[in-house]
Length: 157
Length: 142
Image 1 (tube, one colour):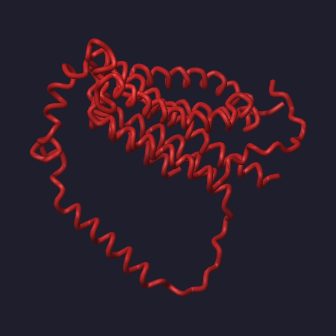
Image 2 (tube, one colour; image 1 turned 45 degrees about the vertical axis):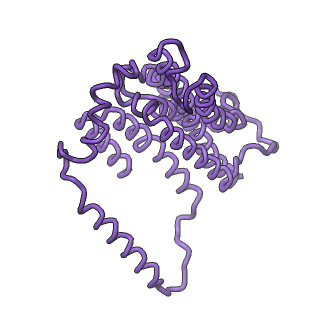
């Protein structure tokens, strides 16, 4: 439930930042489908953790600390929030903003960047989603191909 | 008869609207926020809602798992197909402006087609994920 509230708040924040496309995705994925999938996963597991022998893995702790430290160090170079001089706003963004309507001919800039200028990236994303689906099918099984005798169902009226 | 009459009637009213909204998001994506990803997720959410209310058997009669698994590949293939079509039409991979005589028409046609591919794949993958989880749950119960 906290996840759902968080996603809904995040979606509202994106609307405030004028990123309506992202907000739509966040509301549908974060607040909708992923909660259902999480609940489905919770149903599949047991309610208690398995007891491991209490040896702590020091190497894992060190790896996690170093990785986390490196990631935090990486954020030091990030430009300030909403900085107009940030590299992301200097390189190709002005061209997209000014020319995309003339070049592509559709008014929604996000769509033309996503589908046309960055079409190959989006193809990659689609393939990632597809392979994620295949991976889940391999791990969990389709669960539905087997024909087994079902108990007689009551008609839904 | 199931006792959740409010839920069932409410869902029956909502689901067609959600499906229609998904199609609007899909095909109006060039003019308003949205596109294939969002439309696919919203479409899948309608199916998930139907499953939550009416059960897995009912939904799998309407949307069979085999079809869902096939569609998840069909969407990606449609995307790649548009790219290859552009190559045959004399452009680069995914260069839509060669698809029609007018570059703007070509771009728009290409974008609509690949967004459709994205939408099909996203919807099918999310539905098949949900089927996997829900199907496992039912197997455990049996």
